[in-house]
Length: 259
Image (cartoon, rainbow, N blue to C red; front, top):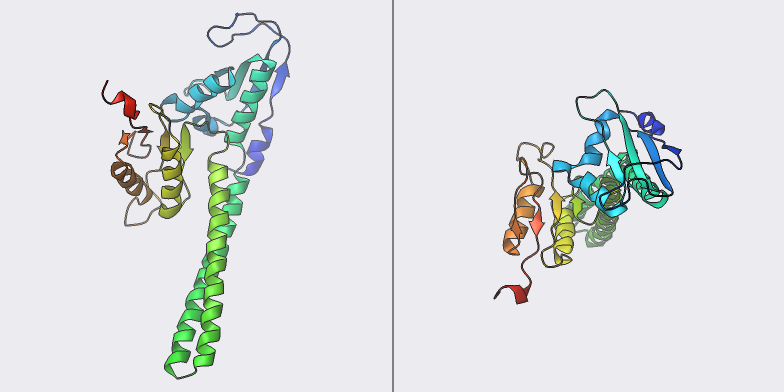
């Protein structure tokens, strides 16, 4: 799907109108408004999330009523209703979820840059070894220094790529959901470890690892590594779906263990 498809995702608002608000709010609250977002049908899953988790978080965190057309319906417009502030917050979150993955493209370019620098590091290291073998220690030293510099450039590019990819994948996500798509095993484990450390007693976190369809003949890499991390940290978790979305739960608070 081209980026131009996303250019039509612009809300049209009518204000004020009587509208349905979240539970607990008056059915015809003063200042209520609505927005209609023509989101491509293929992107509705990003808004709904696994088992409805994303849209539930959006409703809870913005206070807006969000309606997505049924899957079988030909309609593609997502409707948001509520107070002006709630609608604005929800529209921003939804737009971020379905926006073109520009940052991801930047991340892909940085991955390529890191790959080139890594290849250069390998070539220079091999040349340094060859120079040393023939007794040219000065050349070997120069080539070794250059190899280390190329390695540093590769590491820096990978770090910037991981940041861009993570930001693109997690745009509009709430606190309770983290998408690890596009990260290396090491990067994914670092993110997962930090997020698990930040969990409060009883709080749940959904870690989206992906099914590993692009991992090659060796099969998934991030998913089993994340599950191993959770087991090592003694964090209770449940594998959701085809093992792609394990939602870890914070360990019981120490004071609650004897209750």
